[in-house]
Image (cartoon, rainbow, N blue to C red; front, side, top):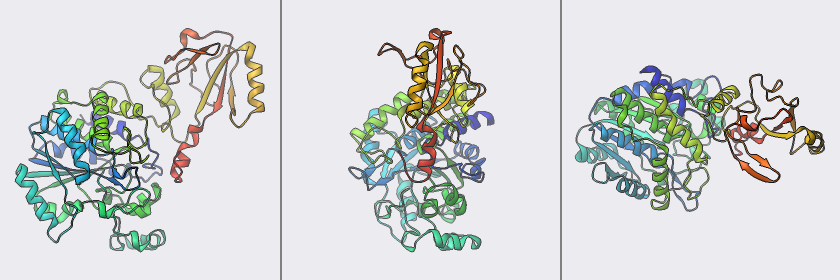
Length: 462
């Protein structure tokens, strides 16, 4: 089972949003080794579970909670329910409609409890709110925070050797505040549920804490030293959350971490057949949460059915693949290198755009023309080097590269092709074996996907 859990985690740790989760050798992913497996094992036992989510985006049009978090929270809740566990989802009032419409759609409105997280802090906030939660479901063994922002570091939580760097890279007004990735203060819009995640409070109440995040500013990221988040994540020095948990799951998108935790829980319970996870259902829920629940894409700041500005095909590939992996199939979507991308394309397992994959590797566009037109196209590229920078030109009839990659077959190693006849698209296959001819000449041209990562890491998303 350990290898199956490892496959689940690897599938969801692809840094599709280019946040810098593993930019350096010492990173957010390396610092949480073993936490996912331990979280799954811990959650497999116990009593009631409370799931905290909801992340307000004040700069969105209109201002609203985001789509990352609620989908993963709902999947965890459905999984726990299928195992006979009592569960509560709690969020701020502005996020409740998204869950209400989703639970009604799934026929679970009377089975999964939904409670508003109070915005107003008080001296006994944690004790009072816990009492309210226990009144609803009885004994509670676990708290789960998924994409739930928590307060940034204060000077007191910084090791002495890092104090100088902390003072230089943060300002007094932002310390101890709940901040978005861009550093926007959302403390007034966020329920102070981090108070319930206090280690002493949870130990006294026998509650295990699990955190799921993707950017460094979520509850649980206090497990990772401030200097590590500061070094890996753009703006990480300012926004890094100080709240700790017992087990922290870092994922490329927080929803993905929720999908992995739910699937891992079923593996631990030896009940994988109970999974309700599939991309079509998740897309239906997402559309409902946006259209009727009022959520927005947190990265794009718009009320559209997307998450973190990532094409749904990428989400679908991750949603559908982790569970396949847990069943022992060969599919793997941890596409960290060019050869991994090509291998998955060759098998027909990867058919999505390559943006976000193989960070640090050169990506290319492919143009294939009959030999009679090859010289004209070469001349066109030479005269237009900015839009058509040539990386490699192959010999006539050869589908195999020799310069930019040593193991590439251009007939099979792309996710999808467009085949033109005159000026009309006649096919969009996943390989072009049946179209290949001995008179074809292939051109590999530079692609902007190559520098997507550099742009995003320096605060310039495309």
